[in-house]
Amino acid sequence: MLLRLLRSVTILLLAVSIVLAFAQSGPDAQAEQEVRDMERQWRQAWLAGDAGALDRIHADDYTAIPNIGTVSSKAEVMADVRRGVFRYSRMEHSEMTVRIYGNTGVVVGRTVNEGRRGERDVSGDFRYTRIYVKRNGRWQAVLAQYTRIPASGK
Figure (spheres, rainbow, N blue to C red):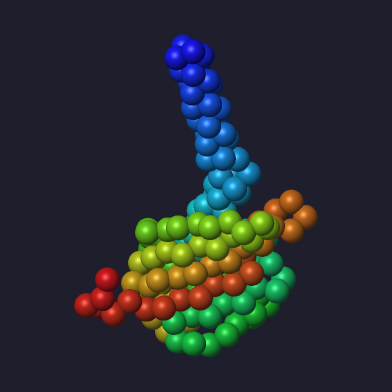
């Protein structure tokens, strides 16, 4: 009787382990990795000033809200990118979390940037939120919002 109970418990624990392992490497884990890859591509494209890559990464309905509170559409951002208005020499992302909600990925992180948008210095330490939506089999950014971290802030 005790042996049968131990076998049952062992099988149950094995089954739970398999389910947990699948859950951790299931569709959300894959989607999270895909969104993290998009963040890497996004960073590289901005540093390189790669308008073609940025055009693919940003959805047509993309909106950018920088720390100064303005709102820019994809068309406005891309026009500045194509004119070479944006120049970044450094962009370091850290403290990144990615959450997946179906076909939506929400990224919250920290970035330290050195760069310019025309005459305006866009350097600094920021918290950011970026939202990606998966459409037609690919992830695209639909929103980015930045908040400057004060020099004394964490």
